Image (cartoon, rainbow, N blue to C red; front, side, top):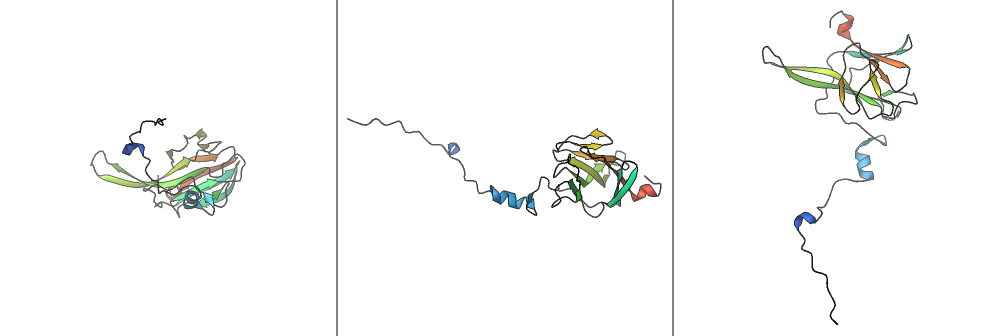
Amino acid sequence: MPQSRSPKKEVKDKDVPKPNFALSGKLVAETNSYNGVVLKYFEPPEARKPTKRWRLYVFKGDKEIDILHIHRQSAYLFGRERKVADIPIDHPSCSSQHAVLQFRQITTTDDESGEKLSEIKPYIIDLDSTNKTFVNNNPIPPSRYYELKASDTIKFGFSSRDYVLIHDELDDGNP
């Protein structure tokens, strides 16, 4: 008795999976990590060290408890994970990698002269934290850069600490 064969299926190039030589599993974790911790954030190409001498004044209630000089690098990671956080936050409502303060070079065009103007500005980005990041008591959208202005107050989760952003030119009375 002849065996019945199923009809042969014609294989097309688009049906054949292409080989994937990208890193996977533990190898990916190792390349996107620091001190054994997988990082949630990478700096954008427009990241720059600030030209102004920015500081964060840390308050708990009405009492100033610290001054953080944040003009020495282009980004600062806030979070509970001390292995990777530039500025540790120990409050239990904060995520291990909560937010990043990122200095970015922004180029605009002057309306009057048409000249290109370049300025390094501070931004904050919430890294999909559980309990949000607040600027002037308003929650900011997650995973999006939010421009900061001098004298803005930043809060993380339900922490009672306030971080007030200031730069040297404000001390002199200049904007």
